[in-house]
Length: 350
Image (tube, rainbow, N blue to C red; front, side):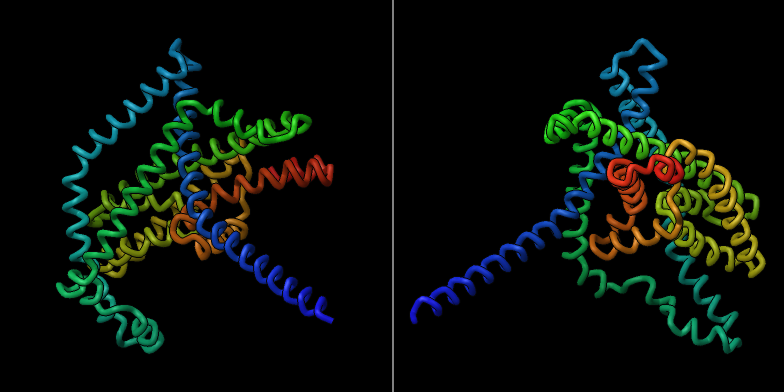
């Protein structure tokens, strides 16, 4: 008579303990996801550095270590020289942009307030005075800003050191990862790891080329249209090109608002300029570079951005595209080829 209640109590404790263990594991995985993305960003940096150093060592008698050292020195020197030449002008333009964007938004409201269809839309936008915080708001956010800045600096150094260490000794970490695989699967594991690395390498090369093309074309086009702050707007367009789909839209908004200060037609010209640059980048440069890597369907990229953006935040949103590219290679190699044995379909995805 007494054994059944005891067994029931034991089962209750067992189920409760197992549930708590699963919950704790889920929480650890949740927090570990951000750490994984931070490490993944370091991997991207390492792949970028090794791509440059490998190309240099292949065409020169330099060793891999010396080539990597020269690449690092060259990049640091280029950033210092570029910062010395551009930083004063960019800082001045950024300050001017902070003053002109509220004016542009206020002027936009005045021009379209007579149209009923736009009145409801503009009612959802913030007032021009709300774009710049007042003194009380700024003081209230000092602690949060300090905490955010400290976290950003710490994450940057983690990303930097992971990238440098991986770039210095990639074979050490690659072989260590492969040794976790059983002996009969290590050759296939090497092929998969190399395929993922090659895909990410060419994805990065494509993005760097696209960012350079978009940046230069944007600065030149805005200069020809006599739009103010062309250099800052071009740099912003180049940086946001790293984020597919959403980045070009985000870079267009401030340019259109500043052009609207001149005239509505200038805003139209700027919109046509940005759309034209994105069409050339999307339908010429990107397909040309994607011959060496996986072509990501736009719907899949947007889905990945939503998933990683919601679960992880801004870092997941920014890294969604290369993560999707790496996951497609894994699905292609490990599921389509190894499980379904469908080589033809796997090749068609590339």
